[in-house]
Amino acid sequence: MGKDKLRRFAENETFAHLFQPKRDELQNGFALKGNWNKKFFKNDNPIVLELGCGRGEYTIGLAKRYPNINFIGVDIKGARLWRGAKTALEDNMKNVAFLRTGIELIDLCFAENEVSEIWITFADPQIKYKRAKHRLTHPNFLNRYKTILHEEGKIHLKTDSEYLFGYTHGLVQLLNYPVIETYHSIYEQVQENDSVLKDIKTHYEEMWLEMGKTIGYICFQPNK
Image 1: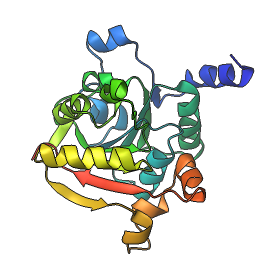
Image 2: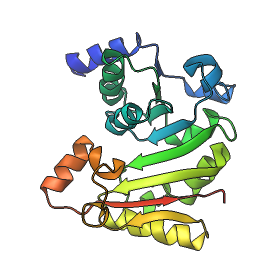
Image 3: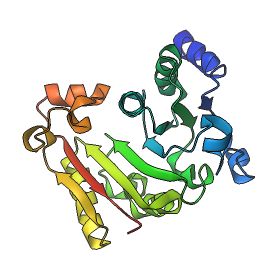
């Protein structure tokens, strides 16, 4: 393991806004579950998650745009989370937190109806059939999201993968979830100049755009 990665892991331990619960801690009752607003954010503002947030570009970007909403970036990679946590600290952002855990444990981290929206940005499409259960929009994951989302809660998927876009779109239709918005190519179809879909770009999105890839988006409500 490189020295830089070890340094980041050590610094992660000092961040008051980065939480790294062990699996047994989650299974035995995570103290922040149902208490994120009361014990950490100290307000009653809505909570929005970015799942598989990587470096936290979308978490940070959304939090700067909407200061009256609380944002939590979730990822299993501590070295990646360090960048987002570091930026939030340097910019003195009070509406941002990060959580290091597996997405399959997300319903152990948040209580029923505790989350208003979920963003999934540029997730691995897991194209191989035997990897299907690892897709972040697989029904196994959607069922977990449903337990923590409000009745009006939304899920946003932004992806460079036509496969994942098509898979999710078809699944949403099959499950009869209301679709709020859908774009096969946001840079061709979204007209607003200040849209969060175009203004906030992740590291990978910049790469995909340079390669000429199409960026798709779908927003739906699984609890309606």
